Every structure is written in structure tokens, then in C-alpha cells.
Length: 146
Image 1 (cartoon, rainbow, N blue to C red):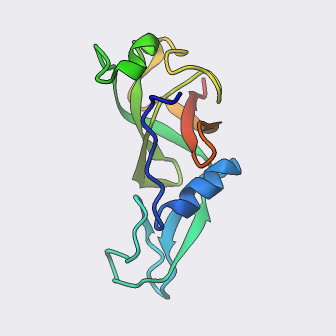
Image 2: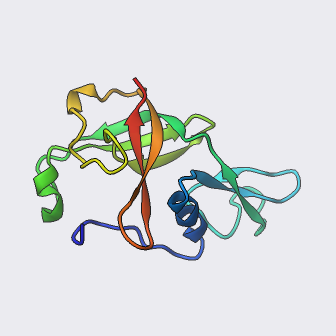
């Protein structure tokens, strides 16, 4: 997996990756009294009330496929052996305005091409699974619930 794209772990997003490594899906929220709005991607300041106070709220790990694409051909050589694979945008069940990008796979350590593209549908229910890909990064991927 040395050639695969990995996210850059910065100060604002580091807690997201630390929770993912523990098998938890958490989203940053404003901790200012009266606000409490969720935000993703993580950032230092609330875009709604401009507070710098934040906390990380546990999510259920469930969502629905909001959109998806099947790259043909893969844009990067490191992904060619796994084509065709999917890239999905998932709207979280407990925070529909929060959407995460990932892949639908048959299991946490399964390859990106482990799900037949014909099974993907907009609105399909999914649940988060966690796949360690480096010492610093555990990716959030998704499994179909049906």
C-alpha cells in the first residue's frame, strides 16, 4: 500500500484519525454554549458562531450512499490492480449534513474491488468499518448493510 494516497494528518484533523484507529467514528462539534453545530472537515473555528471551542462527538457509524463513482481507468497507477473500484460519498445517519468520502468494501481489510459495482445504489444503507493502512492512519471505509 506504499503507493496509495494517504490523508495528511494535521493538527485539526488528528483527533479524527486517533478515534478511527480505535474503531470510533467521531465528528468535530462546536463546544460553545448555544451552538453545538457539527463540522467536517475539522477546522479550528466554528463557521457558525466563530468559537474556537470544540469537542469530538461519537457517531453511530451508519449512513447512506449519497453519491458514488467508478473510476475508469484509475487516475493513479497504484489503484490499477483494484479496478474497477468505487469511491462513495456517505451522508451520516445521525448528521445528514456531514458527508464522508470513502469506499464500499466487503470487510475492513478487503480490497477496494471487493464489492460488485452493480450492488451500489444512491441511498443504500452502509456502516463504517476501519482499515489500518499505516502507522498513523486508519481509514474509514463502508460496508453495505443489506
